[in-house]
Image 1: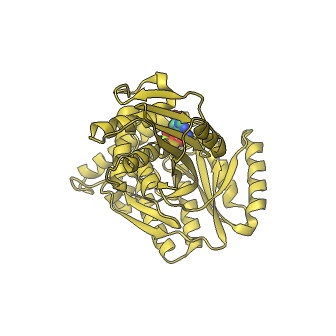
Image 2: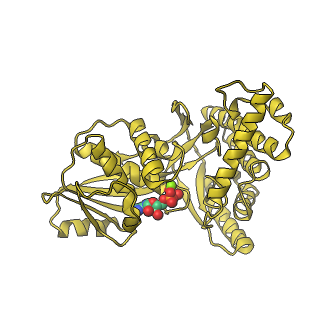
Image 3: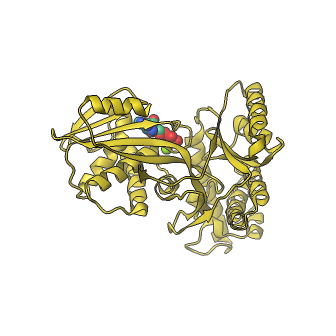
Length: 383
Ligand code: ADP
Ligand code: MG
């Protein structure tokens, strides 16, 4: 694919281009925690998006992607001020370009062409990847200051305000800041973060794309957020949480005292999941992958039984994986009801793991999953 893209560039007389890359991400543990004041732990994965940048002398902004058909031409003056359904995927880079210009970055004409092996709309954050890639390449090319946490915040704001998706900061922060062979322990409120060694030795991290469209996700997300807020209200009213504290700050004893069964289970997921992230970080620091795997599995059970965001497809993937020889743990990753699962699998068991899981998943759901082995990779970079 990327050869084709270079050909296209060469034929148009573009030599001396610069290449950039932004990875996708998976969250290892810490689900539905970002809006509850707690910790998440993503890695950047091997799959991602490449961009080729080349300035042009016609003052045109040309955007093209090999995964989409239209080539869109703008000038600095005609970059849309707001989301426009007519330009489809170009809203993502256009939103970033518009914001960079508003922030005072002086741009000339340029061609920015994208090529990707990152599935779109599967929960691996292709949207954050294309945003961060656009911001990083243009700031680099036009002599702005590269501050990766700032780039992440800028891109999250573009996704919230320009695209209109109310995502948290995790995706953009991971795509921008992750480090090779490390997981990123991130407090989504304070943006305090730490790179924790993620060294797998005889094991590998497998990403399993369920291919299930995530149709329920938006309504369920809003509902769970409201239920978490209700748990905070109850815990504040009985003095178990102080003003300014978050749901993750509650104790398990306080949570056990919540009267409403649904609200109690939602709170139990949030509080226990945040504790699991801390334990998981410790397990990685000590190189204890068995404990890490058990925490992944416990996280899935909690999302299934207490937070109720999994569904048949994700349960089939995670629970089948957990029972295959050589698998230390598996869980759904991302918001829920589809997207991807992850599993920690002994390297010499990957083939049999893949065969058993694919067969079983297709038998139960009629869907064919895709399985990728992924390393923990660096975030956005020039190539
Ligand atoms: P996710 O972030 O989970 O992959 P989203 O729905 O948030 O899913 O973002 C997917 C959208 O991002 C795509 O529909 C497309 O508009 C845009 N996008 C992602 N990758 C690319 C790419 N390589 N080229 C063009 N647009 C892309
Ligand atoms: Mg996205």
